Length: 217
Image 1 (cartoon, rainbow, N blue to C red):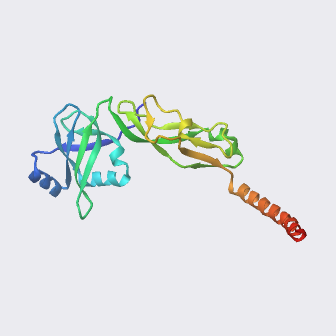
Image 2 (cartoon, rainbow, N blue to C red):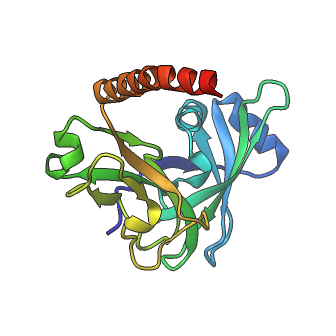
Image 3 (cartoon, rainbow, N blue to C red):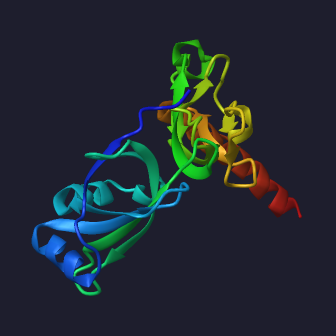
């Protein structure tokens, strides 16, 4: 099931070349080009403030967008390059790649944990520590999952959740070729403190015996 793909609004750029690009920047726009997908390249402009905001949100180069251009059909795109000013580090140009529904792309998919009330470890006061709240997957553009879901039912303190325990959508594959940790269920701090005190008491109790053994030696 495909998730909600964010829209990216742009307008057709009249004219090409450096002159048209400079004029676009003077008008508060960032020039770009849309290519691929068995169609002719399309010169576009995107509002500078809109693009800058999306760049600051992160993951721009690994986010699938629904490109909306007046007079053109909506198309799914992914950014392949953002050129920046050498001094100001602000965007000056971008390249967008059109995607077919069968195209394979790398995207970050969020992980959701459900049924925490059915986890014995959490009932005991355990803490679910999320190591990765999203996972990068190689997926098909026409079948992008909205999220990955892990059922915490039966999970106890000390359990570790890895990527192999999460059911991935058909055709999807992790970009990391190992069974990495997603989350773990650890003991509450009060219980850990009690365990530390018990260890300390045991060490103190053993100390006289160790001293006596040393004297006898």
